Image 1 (tube, rainbow, N blue to C red):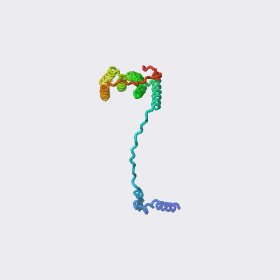
Image 2: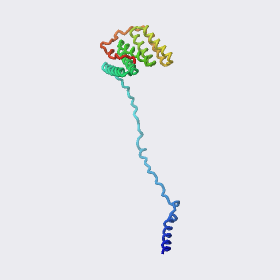
Image 3: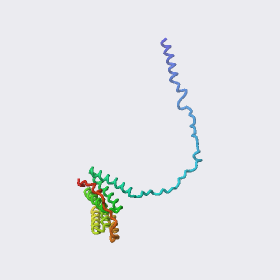
Image 4: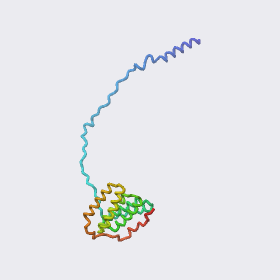
Length: 209
C-alpha cells in the first residue's frame, strides 16, 4: 500500500512540475502594439497673433504734495536708522534728502544734509559715496555763487578718486568740473528757499559711533 501511494504521488507531482513544457515562455505570442490615435485638430486653429502695442512710460508728476510725502518718508527712515545706529544707511538717506531739496531749490537744507552725509561716509570709509556727496555739495555752493569753495570740494573729490583708484568716479568728477567751469559765471539763484521750520534739526543724533 505504501508503494502504491508513493507511485501515485510521484506521478501527480511530476505532471504538476512539467506543465512548462507544454507552454514555454519563449514561444508565447504577443499581440501587436496598438497605434496611437492621431488628432490633427490643433492644426485647424489659426496661428496666434500678438498685438504690437507700445506702452507709454508712466511719469509721476512731482507735485508739492507728492514731494512732501516723499520727504516725510525719507526723513522717518533716516531717523530710524540713526536711532538704531545704522549710520551707513542713514548717510544715503541724508543724500536723498539733499538731492530732493536741490530740486526744490532749498539750498540751505540741501547743504546741511550733505555735510551730515559726508561726515558719516568718511567715518564708514565709503569713498564712492563721499565723492558723490562732494560733487553735490560743490553744485550747491556753485548755486550760492561760492565758486572758490565749490572748486575745493571738486579738488578733494578728484584727489580721493585718484588715491583710491576709482576710475569711473574720476571721470564723473572731471565731467562735473567742466560743467561748473562752463557755468561758473551764472548768477546765483534769487529764489533760494531757506528752512522755515526746524525740520533740519530733527535729526540731532551724533554721528560718532
